[in-house]
Amino acid sequence: MAIKQLSETLINQIAAGEVIERPASAAKELIENALDAGATRIEVATAGGGKTLLRIADNGSGMSPADLELAIRRHCTSKIDDALTDIRTLGFRGEALPSIGSVARLSITTRTAGAKEGAAISVAGGRTEPVRPSPANVGTVVEVRDLFFATPARLKFMKSEKAEAAAISEVVRRMAIAFPKVRFVLSGSDRSTLEFPATGDDRLARMAQVLGKDFRDNAIEIDAEREEARLTGFAGVPTFNRGNSLQQYAFVNGRPVQDKLILSAIRAAYAETIPQGRYPIAVLSIALDPALVDVNVHPAKSDVRFRDPGLIRGLIIGAIREALTRGGDRAATTGAQGMMRAFRAEAYRAEPQRAQAPWTAAASPYRPMRFDEPARGFAEAPQAAFQEFAQPAARNAAPTAATAPHGTIESAFPLGAARAQLHENYIVAQTEDGLVIVDQHAAHERLVFEAMRTALHSRPVAAQALLIPEIVDLAEDDCDRLMAHAEEFLRLGLSIERFGPGAIAVRETPAMLGEMDAAGLVRQLADELAEWDTANGLAGRLDYLAATMACHGSVRSGRRMRPEEMNALLRQMEVTPGSGQCNHGRPTYIELKLADIERLFGRS
Image (cartoon, rainbow, N blue to C red; front, side, top):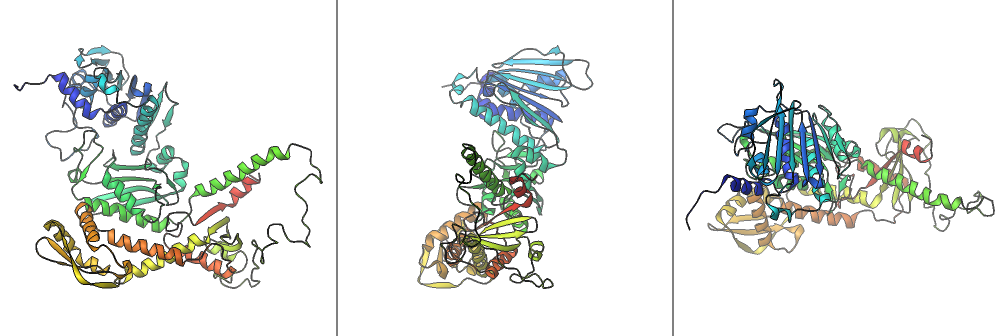
């Protein structure tokens, strides 16, 4: 069969299959063009989930008639010259507009600031009409109708209108977070209007618009730098998490990306602080020299390749963990909000029952409590399950865990003073401006785990010698990488030696792990080093074992604690990193502000 040159229309349709996968892909490309044109206001309108109509209007610089004619041709762009090593714009390939025009009905109307009139052009299924004069405001309006009408087979792979509309919403949200100085409006017949007013330099305010106001109250600022890369953004406290990873946003030099390396680093940074199946909320922005990152590795430009992936991964993990150590031990405000909603729900459910009949003393389920009888619900226990502990009378004593005057501990310590124990499991403490409810088992479990982990990593781990060294056959490159970390492994109780050109001899393993698959562990470490240049598998196993031991060695639920024990637990929590959640990622305490309590009683 003879080789022939494909037609320009067919070439564009092939390119469209890679660049324009769905209406959200077209929206992303067009919004990027508007941002590259310097727009400060972008309005997006859709119908039929973007399949019937997608309109992007901006107030950017616009195009001249000559530029407009070139804009719909493949590989015509104003954003790069002769190299791909210094890309500072969102778009750069010059493929989006011709690709859209080859599979849809595309019209563009534009005007520059100095022009007396605008210009317009239309493309339908690859057929282009000449540029014509047209009235227009400064900026550009791009209208896409009947997407994929020229390639009907692609329509069979589209999802429902609701799903496609949601995908466009997600694109707008990501762009809105990346560019807080730009006002975004998303509207259409198939959705309610979504508007994100510009917030200027206040990036957290824009994040609150997109992620909800709870994010502002539960986020920790991140600002870290390593070599030529800088990481900024906000990470949610561990107890503020979600059931999926959709609220993890990453940007590289302002470009929204969904990069596996970055998502993996976020997951690793929150290890042991979030339950399995739950995901943290984070917004991270990486700034580095464009020459150190390749953005031309995916048709949709959603993936990037870093020249030094280990540097980026280490920067993300280190910065997030430092932020969590600094401010991640507090309870999420959503815990208190959930408690308040529960209280209100109970009140609403009880209200109709109380309103069914006029109140009488005989009919009321409530009666005055006599002081010569115990409170119902507490009388059966040998000791009261709920009691306020007597406070020392001395007011000049220093506020310590067990001896502090009334009101002193509350102002001196964040978790306040223990006042009661509920159901032999929950400690109620009074703080300066509210109260805290602590799960005694979860809190002590975390304290024991951190103590064990500190001891584990502060000195070499005890090792057990193998009677017969285990020989593990590996590729020579893997052997080289493993031996480069041999001293690090030795501190963790794993002793390895080179055994010929393609094998590793394991002579000692960590005693804590007992009998184990040494060969499997070494291969796992080799895989981690090959992908990330870090080996966390061994340390992770030891930490997991320490967490298991801590769970069995902590204060159990159902144990009565003395006031001094409870206060000592609170003081330890205040100085222990990660004490805001247990080893399984559940919160160890919930804080309720006095203002919240007053609202429950209608005082404010």
